[in-house]
Image 1 (cartoon, rainbow, N blue to C red):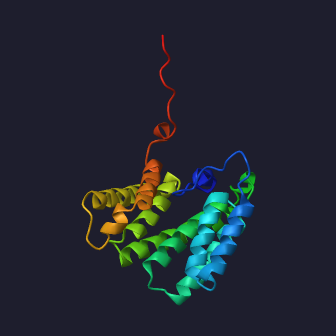
Image 2 (cartoon, helix red, strand yellow):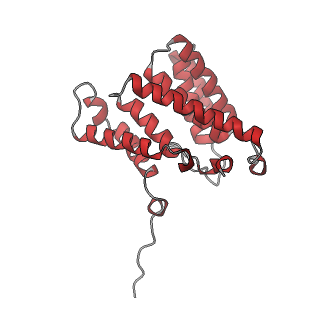
Image 3 (cartoon, rainbow, N blue to C red):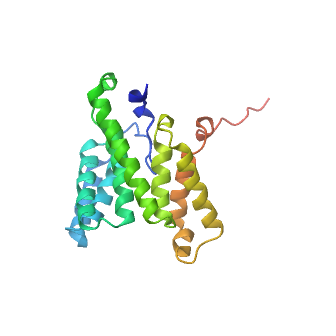
Length: 212
């Protein structure tokens, strides 16, 4: 049962794949632009860019590149809570997008590879929050990942607690992070994560009542 749960995995700002193939060429061009405009050699920036592409395309090669760059970034800056957080979230995406046919997910080999990446994800995310418990971005990355995991992993309550904490900070901003908490793009990300916390029946708008 646990090994077949991965079809449920979603992450913050990760839309369900559209019926039309995603514009991979455009996303790849964004990646090239990131490398040419001051990011070349910056493994953290490249890892985060690859993470965003992987999240949107569900392509395992981008998830693998995000993991590679994030691990390089960790070697260079092992004390960065943000690097730890994105490395944890990247492991979750690698688990989600691991290239295995659905019929093979019940076999131990492919299943354990995915379980390994989920396990690493939890370790890095908890380490990031322990290192920077008041950082809203670190909390949000963990919340989105925990809420995106299948409930069988038992992390939903932890993700929900992170989300509720962030929402309390937005209502009463801390001085150090007041600007970030008031930022419109950050608030949109919080709203996207809040959708993950909704019961399934509330995620799809219901049809309006018909007139008699």
